Length: 204
Image (cartoon, rainbow, N blue to C red; front, side, top):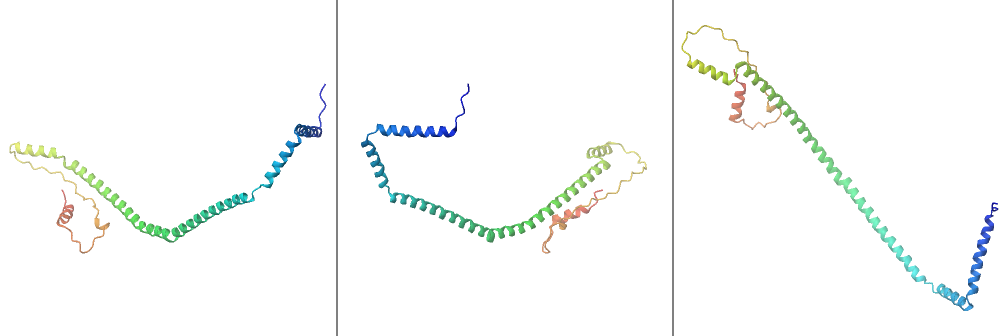
C-alpha cells in the first residue's frame, strides 16, 4: 500500500525539533564550566574588536581608489592633449602634404600618358621598318645581287622599266617639347640638332 503524502510543514517542524534536540543534548553533555568559558571567550572577542584596524583597512582602500582615479584623470588629460595636438598641428600638416601630392599625382599621370605615346610611336616605327624590309628586300638578298652584278660579264643593257617604289610616308614622331617645358636660355646641342635633321630625311 502507498505511503500517505507528507505535509511540508510537518517536515519543517520535525527538522527544527531535531536540531533543537541535538543542541540541547550537546549542552547537556557540556558542563556548566565549559559553557561559561565559551561564553566568556566569545564576549572577550566582542569587546576586543579593533576599530582602528578596520579604519586603517578602509583608509587603505580609499587611498587605493584615489590613486586609481588620479591615474585615470592623467590618462584622460594625455588623450585630450594628444587630440588637440592632432587637430591643431598634425591634421593641417597632413592636408598640406595631400595638396602637394596632388601635383605629383598629376605629373605621374602625364608621364604615363607620355610613355603610352612613345610606345605607340615605337610600334609604328617598327611597322614601317618591317614594311620597308618587305618592299626593298633583306640585306642578304641585296649582297647577293651585288656579287652577281660584279661577277657577270658585260652584256648589253636592255631597256627595262623599273618598278615604281611606293612613296615613303614618314611616321609621325612625338616631340618632347610638347610634354617637357624648356627655358629660353636652353640651347639645343649639336647631337640633338643632327638627330632632328636626320629624322626629317627621307630614307628612300
